[in-house]
Image 1: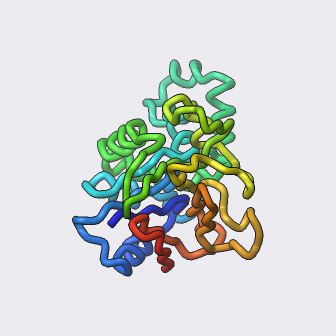
Image 2 (image 1 turned 90 degrees about the horizontal axis):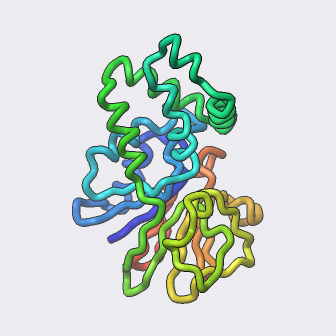
Amino acid sequence: MIYVTSDLHGLELSKLKALLKKVNFSDNDWLYILGDVIDRQNDGGIEILRWLLCMSNAQLILGNHEAMLLSCDFVFDEITEDSIKNLTQENIELLNNYMQNGGDVTLRALRKLRQESPETVLDILDYLREAPVFETIEAGGKDFLLVHSGLDNFSPDKDICDYTVDELIWAWPELEDRYYDDITTVFGHTSTMNYGQEHKGKILKTETWIDVDVGVPYGSSPALLRLDDLKEFYL
């Protein structure tokens, strides 16, 4: 079975494991997290990232929050007079933007982890750099495109490989938007409550796309979507 979730934003690993236990997740199953494991609350998602490093049947798709963290990876360089001198205005703006979007808790957790295990921090950053920006898979006889945010500047004639990273991690689909007819696009990024309070905390399905961002950092329980039969599971 193949499961997807997204935008866990610092969810405790114990809660993710409890949700996976609910569906009897095993070594024969597969989990995709469609970006934004990190930031906003608790340890900023570092515990889940460390867990992902050890999981052979789970994959993170790059989200905009992971991309923001990577754009600030200079904060993990050794601090010297030269490194401080070489900080650019762009560096400062990137860091300020990331902090304002909930990155402070993640940076604190990474700094603490760096004191205990600097190699683990390097492993996490490498893992994020290697994370794919989309996956195409088949489940239950249907084809799926997995991506963080949907598809900005969408055209049915545009190949998925022709989209920029920003178009795949920063899109804000409208409810009436249609994507490919022959493949269901599954994404997060936009909390379903943004499409109406009746969708708050729930997975939202349309004819061509499914939004699995149920708003975890805003108090909703995390959710899983099983692609094989499109069944929803909530903690």
